[in-house]
Image (tube, rainbow, N blue to C red; front, side, top):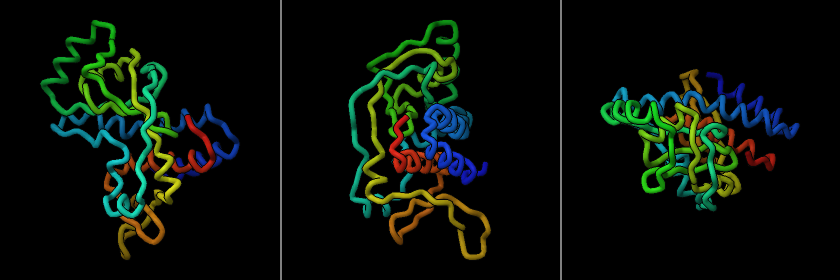
Length: 206
């Protein structure tokens, strides 16, 4: 995946204010993380279900800013880009058999999710296995808490692809704040954070 090509396209679309195309581009860029997250059960491990948690601690401490929590909003799994993080093979098999023939429905006691602004991407962080079925079926509505990443970008956070080492040609994502730069191992999360910075800079919220 060429992250720079995606970010360059996002810049061009943002300059034109083409929010419809940007929403589709963000969905397209979410696909690698969606695959990584949804297949975590095959290795008994889930990917990080919180977007901001992949930012290295040293950078977060220097930022002196945190994402802003907003209201609960309605999310439609048929329309919105949503990602869940199932990790147990046994649970996944159970919910696939249980929910495949049934309409997916929101359980306010079990299903918790964040809708990250300005991206408009939804992350389940509880009810991960049944949530994954809703994502797979593109079916159902739920309430999600809005989390605005804007304060991080306003405080100076950038995501840049830099060379890993002096003699290594590979470029990896880094969280950058002034002269401080720390690598982000979670490449697919980093791409979404970088897209969020582009959108924020252009005053676009999807």
